[in-house]
Image 1 (cartoon, one colour):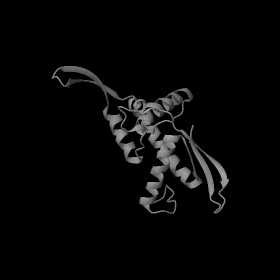
Image 2: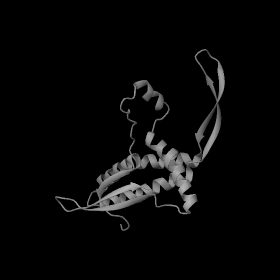
Image 3: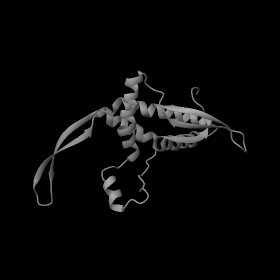
Image 4: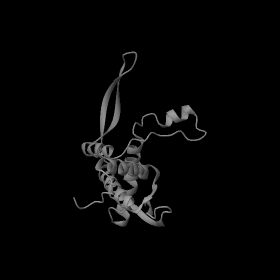
Length: 170
């Protein structure tokens, strides 16, 4: 099949490599790899970010009845994902690995638990809460959609002379 680089790997291995590198790119913002892999990662990452930009605002306010330990019922407003954002979230979760939030140096356990209390998929939340609004504003200001990543060539790697590159979020 034409249209993408096979990277000299079987499909399962290639998908695993791309999934890991896209996950690292979206989590850390920058990845150093070979030029061919960087171009493949760029293609997948651009589609994920475009999906987040187009759907991050789709939310619905829902009123739920919550019963506490004493049997008292109270109404609580909850913000849920709309149907298009939920679909986008599921598509993105199929393409990236789940990374768990790490404790910061010198952060107490109670502070860490408080900071990550209701976050079950930190990478997905980062994509929708940080990258979605950031690149949507960029799209409005510059009038361009896409171009969320850049690939910088670094030269040949010592040892096997593979062309190295850095891929980073703009």
